[in-house]
Length: 77
Image (tube, rainbow, N blue to C red):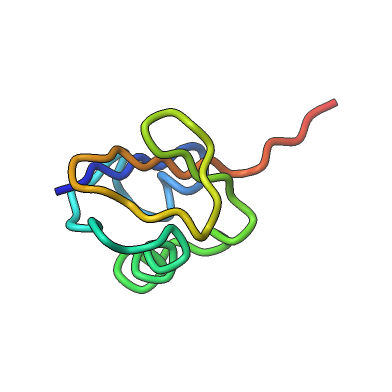
């Protein structure tokens, strides 16, 4: 199993701060599609993804036990 963490407005869209899901063997891009369908989270393409606290590309493969965080872009002034 893998733990998914949602931050900022993504947490509101998902309705959860974190969820457990079986994502081992999937790429980050595949996981983003799955999360968008299952939890209704939009705009994951513009969000950064971290695996075990290190930024990851869409091509990176998720391993059993990894923690994946979705971090939306931040703007400020």
